[in-house]
Length: 187
Image (tube, rainbow, N blue to C red; front, side):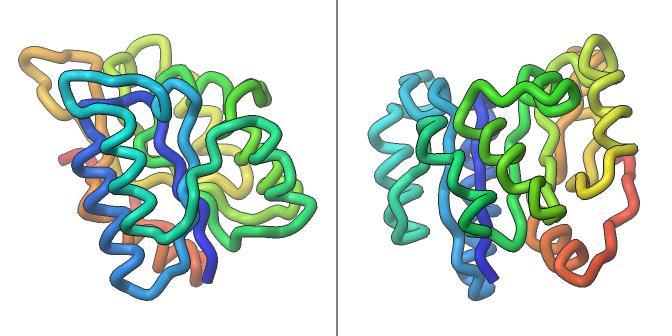
């Protein structure tokens, strides 16, 4: 099974997302990395962009799709069985919810969905219980969208923030592969 694995700009969760990516590869999936332009090019306190790129390429053995024109052929060529967007920021949630395809990741989703194939979302946003809530709600009701179970990550200090359980990415892929979904949970 071929999986597209996209990362958007929730840099503080990259290490957990990369661990989930490793688990998919270890389980035998052929994983192709995709990154938003921001995620691909930005150095942060969580890591240098080039180091992160190198690590992802080393894990997957594939170059990173990071431009819109690289992502557009995903659908016409039916490149992936499943597309994962982990982490998926509030910005990307809004774009997906409203059909906007102006990044490599959102174009990958749009292109992939034309074949009615599943997209798995791993939420990571500080405003999930604020402005992003309506977009999460929309996507929960759209056909072919599935979610990695998610919940509040710090209800005392970050009262609107939610993040997926990265340890359940591979389990979510396995369930979706069989046409099922892990029930949403609060943890």
